[in-house]
Length: 449
Ligand SMILES: [Zn+2]
Image 1 (cartoon, helix red, strand yellow):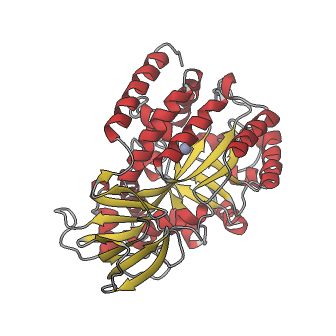
Image 2 (spheres, rainbow, N blue to C red):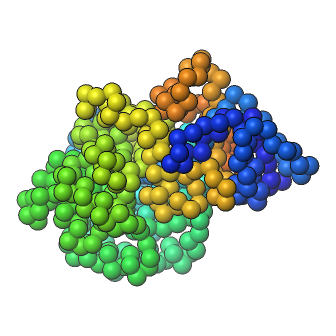
């Protein structure tokens, strides 16, 4: 049965209007058919989901991750970006397609358990074309709405040869992906440079812009993540910042998503705003790698769209967007030494509508509104850490935990119901991921970094 009525919920639509109300949502053929206050009239042909004690939110959007990295949780610890990246990149010499599949599927299940309904994979290690295919297969099997950004590296001292590509070779491989998977609202594709300029030449950037325009693809990139990247762009290209550098090649644009954007100047924030570029803020990863604090408040004030991401589990170490929301809130407050600098509604908007906008999915998901696809989550508020309820937005951001996510629906289909995965054998996915991790760690142990 495709149709259902979610009743007795505390509905948080997450539109521009800050509101919550006791009410219901009716889902018909995967679409939000009605949103209302109070009780709904029950028709005979729909299943009823009693959401008493729960908040009903649009599904969260994880706007930047590397799913396979769940296999690399807590493997390379206490390292700054460059020495850490040297290991992450070096790992490509032994990464196999089956590692990508097993890790990505576990990463997707962790996302579902954390109330995520859309996941944005920034793919950057492709020692063989099958690595991308296996990641996409896992994302599709998970049932999540997915955006797969297949990015490119063509230079860099720490980049292994097996992942360096000539532009035409990389574009051919992306065309193979597009030939095999027709883009849809459920699965979209992007391209991009990985971490300019440390692993991309100016020629590649020029070619990427041309290719992206030709194929109508958005662009994903890691931008100005640490001081070391900014030092590199100054030293090698004579521009004051990474956004300024990328602007020469037309990379900032309305369909571009820049992860991190930690070290960006006010002039560069103006470029982001002018070009309509979105930023994916990854506070936990930035703190873990000691990168710095992204100027999120300044970007929001200037009207830049900011989304939230976990980043890969190798630098997070989870895929938990509740952790990320709380970190995003607290990091700005302590950085500015001003408790009022950012409010919970703004943070929750970044994790929902902001994420959907960044990925070009504003008309599809990100808010609870009639006509959008039914990507919905129920969060249990009847818990020792969320009661009594005074400010639901603050309490979702600061009190709720991923383990409170009771039910997850994408496109009107249940992925998790009453804490139980609907279509996946979680134990098997865990066992397969442990096996993949053992195999990968054995291979990694033979590498020298
Ligand atoms: Zn990343």
